[in-house]
Image (cartoon, rainbow over all chains, first blue to last red; front, side, top):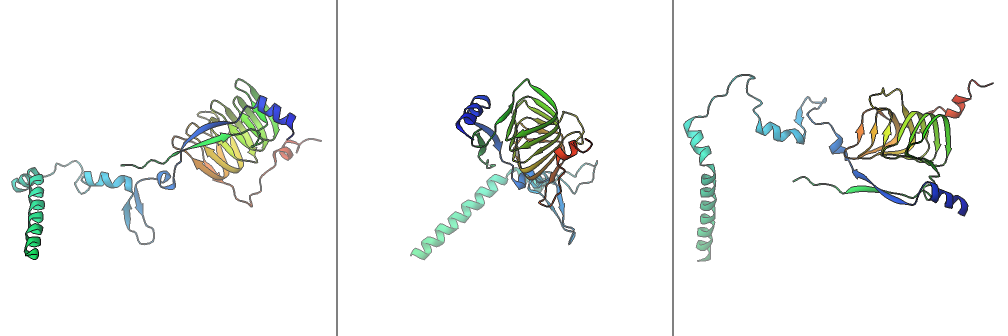
Length: 105
Length: 147
């Protein structure tokens, strides 16, 4: 391309410019989500996008039937789960401190 | 927390990329067209089109028909009509096809490699071109029935 061609190209097509293409789609993002079935051994596995849904749902429940309400003991434990966890952690920390002091002395 | 990758930008340098042809916005071309060098489409073109270089379909640009591009394809606009059959438009790209976040393709897209960007609208099929593929030459097809 000589200077005349470059001049006309620059005049007609335009000056160099930058344009946004977007965020590149990786292979993992482009892959379909859902249940993956291994044809070799028949094992099934959920794709990452569906695992959270599985945890929050109740796949074992029969469709259209109400679930049994949890018993009073389970409801009591679930209601106080944070306090129970905190108590457990404090007990663990106290035990570590106790045994550390015992070793120190 | 989802980790977002950085976005890609493309610098179009018409001289360095040898994009010496331009169909401006508002221009409508149809028929048997051959472009020597790259082509920037901001208007509308249709028919049997051969581009001996890169093909850039700009935002608002529309390309229909049978197209063959020897270089890369950058799709910011529209390939094929909205709602049209994938058979009505086919584009053979002997390089890499980049479909940006504004790109829409309802035609059949054939390319050696494909790069999609988030938001790209690929409604028609995509086929990978292999090295051994025997592509029909549009010029020969056009002159086939000529005396």
